[in-house]
Amino acid sequence: MAKIAMVIARKDFRDEEYLHPKEEFMQNGHEVITASSWTKECTGRFGAIVKPDINLAELLPEDFDALVFVGGGGASEYFDSPIAQGLARKAYREGKVVAAICIAPLILSRSGLLQGKKATVYPDGQEELVRGGAVYTGNIVETDGRIITGNGPAAARDFAQAVMVQIK
Image 1 (spheres, rainbow, N blue to C red):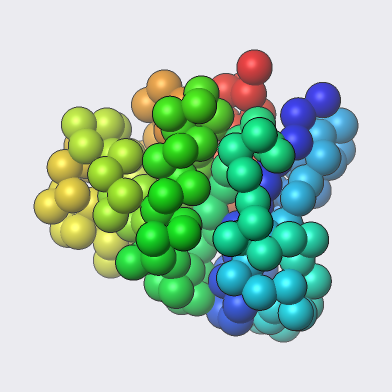
Image 2 (cartoon, helix red, strand yellow):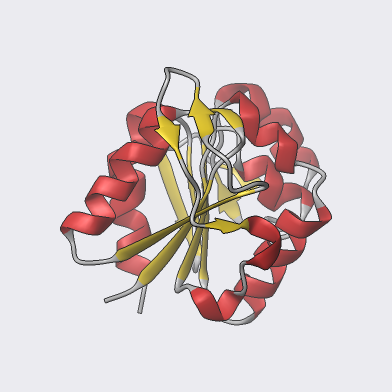
């Protein structure tokens, strides 16, 4: 089965956008690797405590089949991160699935991956997504080739299913 790398913020990642997809992935036999900008405990907006498996800076595209950026307010720590953007671009170039949910699609937008691609985002990110060249659809989940975006916590399970459909 596939390896899926999930990237969470140090704090204020959206609990259900991490926990629900992780549960879906694991129930379908996939391995989940959790990455963050540190390997100390990370705290979700509603109190989930997660100890990452690896520092984001050490994560390589050959380590996974899909790269998933989890949303929530904390995801802003990756908006302008050369490490996060570089990993997203490299993973995409190497044929991996690249996904983001809630406000995290702005990471993909700022990395240039959404140029001309159909995408969705949490409503307050719509304007920036469009400025970044994306074709905003407003759908709960949007798939454009190997790029999957979801618009928020209510989309978490459907988002996970969309990611799994694209993994070869």
